[in-house]
Image 1: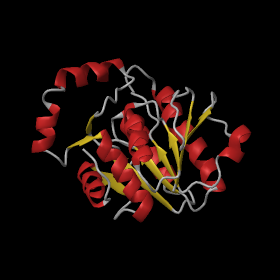
Image 2: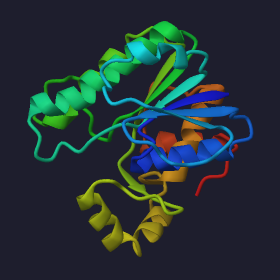
Image 3: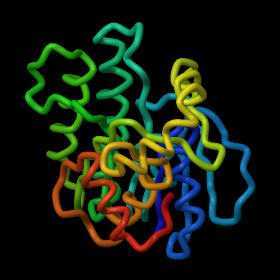
Length: 228
């Protein structure tokens, strides 16, 4: 498979990239983002793009992919609804619309979040924006669109969040998260599980379009890849 990965510098994206580079059936992973990863790996290709709303200059580098893992996201803390919507809805749809035109046989997987509001009418600003994004993605002419809605994610293998508040949370909860995950495997996921589930969906599809934490965990288990 050839995989296109957005958000590879984020916590989820780092874990997904690690799983992709370990998968023997992944021939190439191409990342797209504002910041270079600085990694040297034979199957990894990086595209640095400052304007994530305009892909016209790099369309030739966005064709021939089997799947896109869209892990790009930001916290809504301190942001207006307009700013959060631009970073969540506008950037995602700019990329996805381009990719649907260039790769109609692509499987597109979007990392959303638990509590997303599909009605777009609820009181939570971030949930409405995520819901609007999910709804729009499902109308694009991809081979398949899967919407992942994880809750708590445990970073593994040195993966770190870029968000200071999240880093503090994970540092404080590090001794407890493995125990909580053992007790609640369908509630707390790991970055490896996220990557394994995305690869499974790209290979074989998923039973439904919207996948909550328990569905993601089950998909990773069935996928045949090693996830911890």
